[in-house]
Image (cartoon, rainbow, N blue to C red; front, side):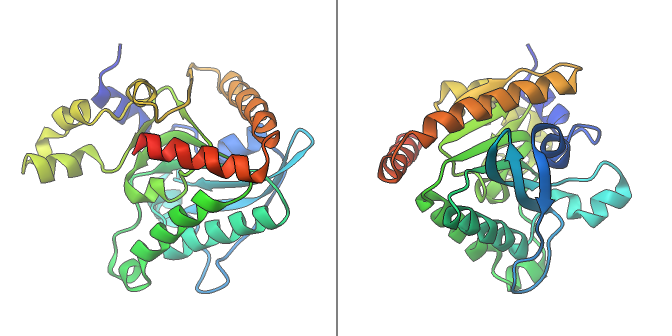
Length: 256
């Protein structure tokens, strides 16, 4: 059994598959869309339209890099306000055309720079959370790596939350938690244990609905995830729009 900190380290590995790897292996005919139609195109968030079997879907993911150059281009997977506004634009488009939404969560947090704050980072995250709660289409959120802080929560309001076995999901990084609670960021390992951020912990708490086991065969992992997504989308699509919203509301009232 791996410790919570060992899971943190695995979730942060540079060579770990990223959002686009999952998108390319699970969906067909992915067409990426760009920009928030207001300020710019944030490459830390990718999104677009794809086919899941014969089901048209909208796919959104937080994208880290696998090299120093790519991480700089992707801002280390830390979205700025325009990234969340792009994601929300695509989600609203999905609702308009009755397309289910799949999100892939993998970020150390929203970018904390001065420019991001000047462009209303907090408002962008809050609006995304609020709007997702009321979207009248099925939403499945997949935590594939590091899901930390409001940067993760902003695209994490779904009817189903599924986590990879070695993914983590929390409102703050262990280092941040240790700095605030223990006044010592070097106690991150202790913080990770106490925060209950692993997939197993979150499933016991009723936050994660399902865990996808990991192994060395990425194709098997993606096929297992694909089967889960298809099965649950079919179940969610049987609900009326009102039933969908009521069940989503009840889910998050129960969690929080």
